[in-house]
Length: 319
Image (cartoon, rainbow, N blue to C red; front, side):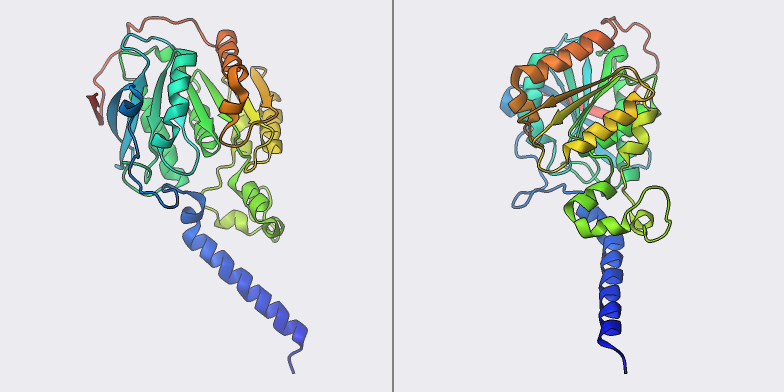
C-alpha cells in the first residue's frame, strides 16, 4: 500500500516537472513583455507629438530580422554625444519619449532608440541571442553615419536594457565610449528568485550542478554579473533605492564586480528613486551626475573626417 507521504512526494514532483516543462516552453513570453496589458503593439505616439525632429530608421539584423528605430536630434547640427538607448522590458520605445525629450535638452545629445525584435514596429520574436544581434545592428548603423561624433557613442540601458547594453559594450570596446546602467539586475535567474522565492532552491551559479536545474533550461539568462567585469569602458551606475522591481542590491553587486578591474566606475544612488522614475525623482542631481560623468570620461568633441564606405542594410525617412 502506497503511503500518503509517497503520494505527496510524487504529486509535488509531478507539479514541479510540469512547471519546469512549461517554463522551458513558454519562458520568452514570461521574460519579455512587448505589449502592455490593455494596449496594442503599435506606438501610441511618435517623437513628432513632442515636437522632436527624428528619422525612422530601418535596420536588418545579422539573422535577417527587420528592425525599427528612431534617431532623434536636438537640432540638425548637434555634434554632442550620441546615446544608444536600450529600454526596459515592458512596452515599446514610444513609452520612453518623455524621458528622451528631457535627455536631449539636459545633455545636448543625440538619441538612437532601438525597438528590439518583436517590440514596436520590429519584426520577429524576442530572445537573448536575437536582441544581442539587434543591439549590434544598431551600433553598426551608428558607426556608419556621417553626422555624429563616433568617438562619443554612449550606451544607456535601464533594467533589461542595461543587460543588453552590457553585452554590447563588452563586445565593442573600441566603438562604445562609455556605458550608463540604471536599475539593472544581476541576472534573469536572480530575478526569478526575487519574484518567486520558492525557485531559489533550483537556481545556482555556474552550470547545471546538483538541483540547480533551472540554469540549464533558461534561454535568456541575461547574466550581467558575468559580463560587467569584462567591460573596459567607463561605467556610470544609477540606482534608485526604492526600486520595487529590481532590488537595489543587484546594482551594488554589479558595481562591486565592475570596479574590481575597472577604475573608471561611478555609483550614484537616489534615495527616493523607484524602478521607472529614478530620473524624475532624482531631478537636477540625476542629470548633473551624467554631465559630470561625461566631463570626466568622454573625449572632447571632434569632427568626423574619416568616414568610408556606404551604409548597408538600412534606410531612413526624415520627418
